[in-house]
Image (tube, rainbow, N blue to C red):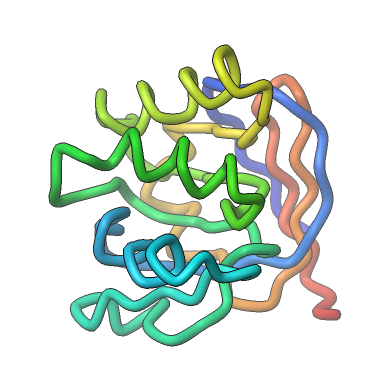
Length: 150
């Protein structure tokens, strides 16, 4: 069991399984098809993200360094959350970018949907976390990596 401490952007308590992207996540490329087809779950369709491509991400904690790509990132987060297909939590090893921050904040304030978001977990976090790990997120920004898989 390892413990990491980050900065809570959208605080919350949650425990669940994670998926890890070692590269930046393009929110538009990831969610576009799921949004356009009004899917009941989000499948990552960003061919450039080999870590997440074609994986169901709706019910997983997403661990990532940063988001990249389109300036539509924030509205994509809000739209996916409104449809109920946004992952329950985003855990950033780096500082969150302004577009993703705007997306999770607007989603929380305007839509009343919470996407727990922690940033600044550090480079070591992404080195240690693995797909399928069960993570526990605390409201104060603490993330506990449980070695046991589901």
